[in-house]
Image (tube, rainbow, N blue to C red; front, side, top):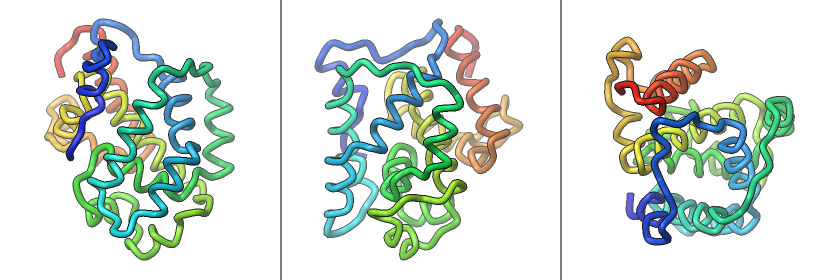
Length: 196
């Protein structure tokens, strides 16, 4: 992928890694829900002439940079639940995919949807299952980027077999809420100074 969020943060002097500290899940969720509702980002994703994850990632990085200075109020779990049940924007499928996947075929496999179906969701609200999977993927990719220092490192982590996860890759486990919990627990352990 062309640009990393961490390198953009380093250019502006903001800290990237949060190791040896607790990750604030409610702030990560608030930041992601803001990203998934960013009208400019959603519009730019819809207007792409040729949809490729690298193009979506480039747009996502720009939106993350724009939101970096904002102060997000912490969200209660019930607020996040309500937003997911209401349905995230269809573009969230591509935005979340761009954070940790390299190709549209990987996105099709992860979301268990054809590209034609993914494209038909643009400009519409997702159902609960697709919204939840997009949120899980983006949450774990963002947490991994914070712990490991960049989305590039997070992307590598997401596709590397992990002994602590029973030999599975984190990306494989994101298909279920229980798998997400396992990956987030492992990232939290690393943030507190443990091995990854």
